[in-house]
Every structure is written in structure tokens, then in C-alpha cells.
Length: 372
Image 1 (cartoon, rainbow, N blue to C red):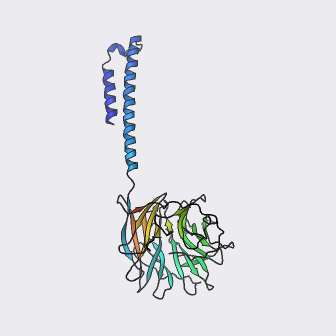
Image 2 (image 1 turned 60 degrees about the vertical axis):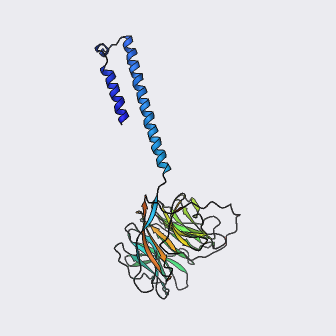
């Protein structure tokens, strides 16, 4: 702006210095020459100014690109489902800060629960069709529609929805159906074992169910679907053991594997509407770390102090995370609420290098209960 002011002042001064005769509506030929000279002089100043401003803009842009965006994850609070000896395992968090999850009681029985943003816990969530009982709360949206899974009288997994105290079963494959995530318009995701025998992920969008598998995977699970219909989850290698994260665009494009460098097994649990992804991975030393992943290749690690097991499970649009850690002294799991914060450097890892293409192997059935 200062340069612009200077050339405008100079131009004004040049025009002011013109003799009265040059103000004629019909200038003589030498008048035209002078005007052309002034015009060229002004144009050169304009070009010089534009080049200078462009150089400044490029310098600023280069500096901005050179400085990587810095993030860290900060602990907000910890919590436990009320009762002695309960294992608290939160799963997802909605944009209001309400949490859904699983807790194991002192007898090892799984129940679902919700924790509202004000800290109020629900009564145990037990699907009435589960005789054990065995019920897991897996997803929650802003309307507090809860989804999850339970085991029926035959021991098979079935999905459910819970709204205002009413359970609705969801069972598209009788042998195995689990519902793992739900977005704010009621579209949802999960995993089934179809007649092919290969455990598949699925998304239900506008009432249309699409099943899919990561190529060559023995099992694929979809844990969450966001507002853009981007889903995420994990899959199991043909060895039936090794896990990797993935995400799937709304057009069906699958991005995999998602593994931090040094991972021996990665599980992706959730994404938000920006497709910021959370999960956990194990390293060669047996330590399990939570991670925040910003596609395409930025991992941010989070370990609860002194814990050897930390898992990040759900993230909302405000980048608030629900997660858990295991107390190494008692073996008890505790819930965590954490916040992704900009402009504070955390511990980062690169994306693991891609492995050499593996030969295509015949898929074989590997049935896996969903991780939590």
C-alpha cells in the first residue's frame, strides 16, 4: 500500500507540473509525445510496484509453506463409569461433547453407556434381545441416536439403534452384523459376514447399503462415516493377524494402508467431518500409542503419562477426542477426554513406507469381533 501511495503521488506531481497549454482538448504533436512519455513513466512505475508486491507475496507464501502446521493433543479430563472395578472404554463423541462407550463390570460383562457433556452417565445400556447380557455402545450423533452391537441367544453379533429408550435391531446378515458408527443425518457404517464368507465393511447412505472390502484383506470393518460420506476403519491382512487402517472416499476410492512408521498393527476408529482420523497402533516393544492422523501423511502421537496402552477412539468437529488408557499398576481402563490444539508442537511420525506389492492370495474367512 505504501508503494501504491508513492506512485500515485508521483503521478499527481507529474500532472500538476504540466503547463496550462497541455490541458487543451486538442494537444499539438509534441504534446502527445510528452503525454506518451508520462504514460510510459507511470506504466513502468506500476509494473515495478506490481513486481515488488508479487515478490513480497511469493516470499510470504514460501515462508508459510516452510513452517509446518503444528499440533499437539492436550488432556482435558479423565472419567470412569460409576461402580467398583469397572473397565471404562469410550468409543465416540458427538459435536455436543456427549460420549458413547462400553464398560465391563466386575464380572466381565459388557454394557453400553452414554456420558453427556455435563458429566451425567446413563443407566447401563443392555439390548433386551441379549440374554447374556452383552451389549456395546459404538456410535452417537448429535440427536443422541446411539448405535452398537449385542450377542443374541445363538451367540451371533447383531446391530442395534437406541433412541429415546427404544431399541431397534439391525441385522442384514443373520450370522454377523455390527453397527459401529452413525453420522448426523442417520447414515451409518459397520461390518457384516455375507454369504461369500469374507467379513466385509458396509456403509448405509440414504437407506442404500454398500458392502466393500479392502483388496486382499481377510476382514474389513468400517468404524465411522462423516458428513461427506467418507468412512474409515481397519482391515486384517491375509495372515489373519496384522491390522492396518484405511479410509474410503464417497466415490469408493480406498486409501490404504494407514500405518505410522514403526507400527506392527494399526486400528482406525473414527473420523470427523474434516476427515481428521484417530486410532491406535502397537510398536515392536509392545507399547500401544494413540494417534491423530491428518491425511495424507501427518501423524500426531498421544500417550497418557506412564501408560503403556493408549487408544484414541472418536473425534468430533471441534477436534475433541474421546479415548482411554490402561493403568499399568491395576490393569483398569479409564476414559479420557482430550483436545487437539494448534500451534503447539507434539510428537509426530511419518506415514510408514509402502511395502512391496504382495502376491494376490485367495481370501479366506477370518471372523473378528470388533476392537474397542
